Image 1 (cartoon, one colour):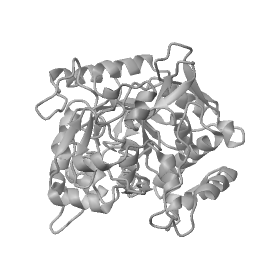
Image 2 (cartoon, one colour; image 1 turned 180 degrees about the horizontal axis):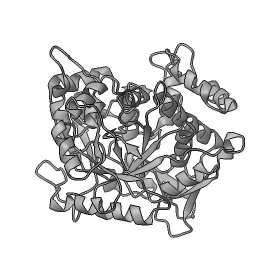
Image 3 (tube, one colour; image 1 turned 120 degrees about the horizontal axis):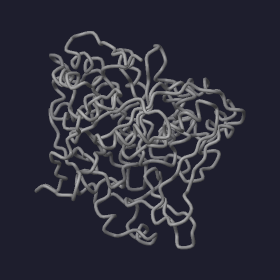
Length: 474
């Protein structure tokens, strides 16, 4: 198999959108769309009016026209919503989603992958988070309907995903065990049957599965004990943006309150190489020297996120991109409390975003998107949902610990606002939340003389050091 040297990271909610992934693929590298919250992204694009018509063009290619009619009837607004009108919400994910939500999620992931694949024959991937389990099955099926070539998944231990890909490729239903807090009863198993779309399921191409890991131990576990074939690994270090793996051992914080990473947290590349599978290194690898270092260590190449997150084609609104690039460096804080997942999460301290204390304090806590809600077992045996970033009293009333809610940020709303699709509320539009890796300190190296922004192609050419990309046979 020919694998690309450079993987573009699948970042945020729509930061790694179809335009960015397509631009990277046109350069011969692996463009990756973020699969997080795509149902929300789709319905808000439609409510904005889809002025250039690309979403409707992709929906016209969706093989189930009755579902397109259903989605358009619920969410499309010709000419777009009035400026202060709130977006209509899609249903929140749950253990037993409605047929409408399943169909919407399938369509949303199909749209993003379909658009990314237009105009070329190179590979496109989709990135999902193990911590966001509830929409996973429908998301994978939608991406596979569009012919996705790679699935990348981290933020947990995605042992079940290879088997899901195998089942969908055969045209069969698939199941996924759902984590449930306080669960002493029978396991909760979610099932997705492709016939929910309205007819017999076709056989589909099985994409390559790359697990995102931070240790050789996890890589070995996934290679040997997953439900199907693991095709490789992205080995991500602490400098990477978004969610980071917690440090090994007891949590220690530095003087700023950030987790302290030590020698035990450095991946054992020799052990990973010994597994005999392709791997890519991630976390501050966006340079020719770091690419050479990765290749010398036996890696197939590198994964790069932050450099692409602020390029011209990414989904981040232009005002935020311009602010970051113009400053030539933004302070980052690896926040041990921000994410409802409990994983450390890197936050860029930009004015007007919820990273700023007074903006965070003024924002009314609300949970109306629900992608990071945790399933939990109620005392009567039924399943409920709670999120440490929801209103504190609501969380406590559901059995959550008050201390677990302290300092939590609503990633669902904040990251969606980073695209310019923040919900409009009585108190104003939702503030953005920007995440990045440590490479945010040196984005101006991608700028040519007189430039104020840069393209995905310029990032790729910089990393290659002017050389034409080579594909490595595995």
